[in-house]
Image (tube, rainbow, N blue to C red; front, side):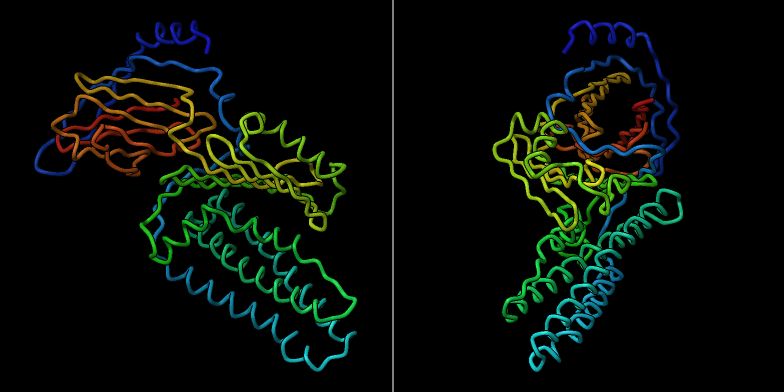
Length: 399
């Protein structure tokens, strides 16, 4: 970190005062209207080089935070998808396979395979259309998550159906059908974020706060529980029909090292797999801050999908900002790439047990016994509010 930069910023910002009036809150009394002073800000210019790079969205981004819990619609849709997929596969294969000739068996298997891959294509179209509609304000955030979960569930059913087809090909002498590449393409729809949302949707876990960011050609979903889990997809980085930009899997692996230099410099293990028939290169790495999985598209040579599971407490601080309002002090530590932020509030000893924190009006939780809370911030500037029974403090972050 350049030691001159924080000192200069502190000198400039200590004279910058921001007074924000706070409206009266509900309850028996009026909340105190506090004046907030931006006291100091320091920036670590090298923080981004001390953690993993992340797939970024571009253009105008819609950002929203929702709490996701039990949803009957998701359960019913998933069941319906499973029934229809089973019917499509087994009516083609199950009733005729045993009595069919070898040539007929090959035709039955290939027809079933084509139907399943057509459904797989439909998952991608459905997801792309839903993200685009959400970015345009034509689809709610909850509706988008329902569609992503529907794909999560249907991808599992389709993958199982491919496995059944693979088993049947073993019973056709001299015939083979590779299903692994298609199964891995389906696996892109089954992510740790969606698994957590599925548990919440079925009531198997607590309601889950998820930060959703979309633009016309991509999205990112972020969850903060015991880990920071983020999945991101760029549809504009996918051209499956084009030839590959990579000579072979080693070429793709080497390029991944250029895209994620910190990960490969600090890797504990790493590997790559080539899925030739779907023009994808799967990169996986375990490093000292967590795990990375990325799918490079052969057609564009860029990252199409990415999943990262990170220990948020091990992430470096990129910006630290403090505000004061009398005895109360707010310190916000922001991590690189719009990652999790840590808020610490002091001067609230008698009020802390009932202190809530909101981001743009959405309650992200309460301060813990140490006066801290971690949360995933929006993509753009936002209002951060700390509220007790008797007072409220609001600051603007990123303005």
